Image (cartoon, rainbow, N blue to C red; front, side):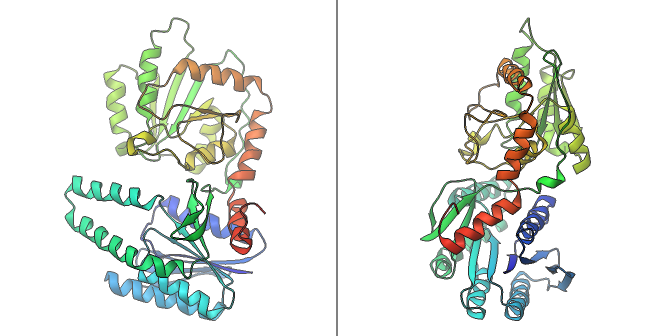
Length: 390
């Protein structure tokens, strides 16, 4: 089977690039030929098993999309892929043309579309509000224009798309097209499984990784630590926060104001190897606690997947399609503005320390649910059969 991954989004973040590589590698691990085409800077990168071919793109937006579309369609005509996987935010003419090209060049070819942010309406409203607040009326108008084009094209696109992929939010149809909800994935093999063994009397070290400062909700932990200082029988607890200085600045101010510099530390940005060391040296981790700030309930956190692969217990405050209240290595808290009850975390840590097989159980859970190989297998089988579990 031949598979092509296509993204024409201008995102150049490390997470974005790692996601593309992870999804392509996941398909290859299933024994398939998997290639990719994506815009990176001023180039279109076409990735095959033989390496990466770079195609320069024009400067103007209109010509860039036209050139990228032509190059991708040339590749589709040459290779006649069985599956073409498109990733995008809003439907545009490029995505529609690539999808139609895939269908016309190979009988029985399947087109899969990954909806980057769902529900789309909420994502667009959030972005529009951001542009209004910043006074960036040019970007505001550009997004409004893209939304109009999306509305005009989505019925045509649903006619050539076989499956819509949604991350983290349960749904069965999008624009009348069958959809499948999956977790966002990781390459589990890149995360070392922790080896730390803790005794019941050991101090508690909490690890937090700031993915999105707006919704991480770590102020809830800081306020909880402040209240915890009055607890006479309190455990010794340290809260370490990983993130860029710009992302943690408000937390730094909050820590200073509450005189918590002795128990809240800021570690800066860390590499993959450094994160592996932190997973092994900490007791419990913190995932997203502030989704209520954008009126959200369902979420799929990249950090949660990494915690799980490392085998470190964690707390979270959102609905997750793979986690439930019976998951022994995860503690679900309320998705609201209340300070985190630190004593409750202490009780959770106590239960986790009693379970000597917890780390291995958590690692196996990550391999079963969060590895890109498993996730892409589910997507491909659903597209081929229409069944959600095969």
